[in-house]
Length: 249
Image (cartoon, rainbow, N blue to C red; front, side, top):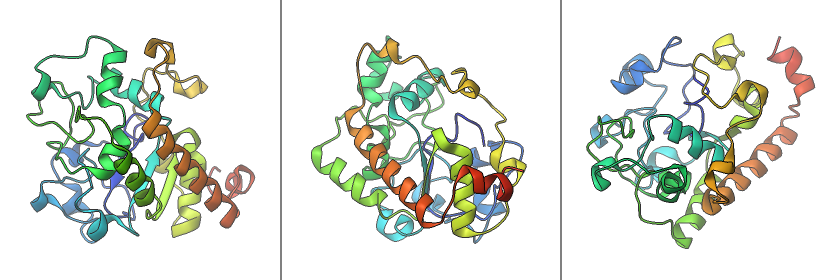
């Protein structure tokens, strides 16, 4: 899975393996549901394709609670990654134009993770604003996040079976295997599509372009994800030292 694609994908169930070890292309065509039949929930009849950016508000209790997995990314980094990825989730169909700059993009798409947790718009399989989409995804919904949505998003995150962090990606993968079994593979830990953020050095995107803007809602959700992640590391006795022999080698 690519560095950019890892950021905040929410799936409806826990697959036992990646559907395609070379690309994310099958996701766009809904082929994962066929290749991983029985391992992931097939929600195509509801308009949702595995790995897309549709909201899970209406399907949470039936398909996600107790089975969902998510790898969260620091909110401002996630937004700048989306901006650099063809203005991913920008509501082009609604506004009829692209964002003027990173600040405008963030002010509209901000709260993306919270929106995806609580709202139910479909994303046409991709949700990006490069001209392929005809709908406004939950992530790109320009209506601001409400206090009720934020409270509900945090509560629903607590019902996920697994929460990892992109900033601790290798440790997250090691924790996943400690919790659910199976062996780590090079595919799990690989980065086949590194973004432009110089992420290999850990520096990330320059948040200065946001001129002080912060994603106050997604920061709350991310903080809860951090708490859950650290709690599970302790519960399963997972550390970088233990993973160096069980997963990283």
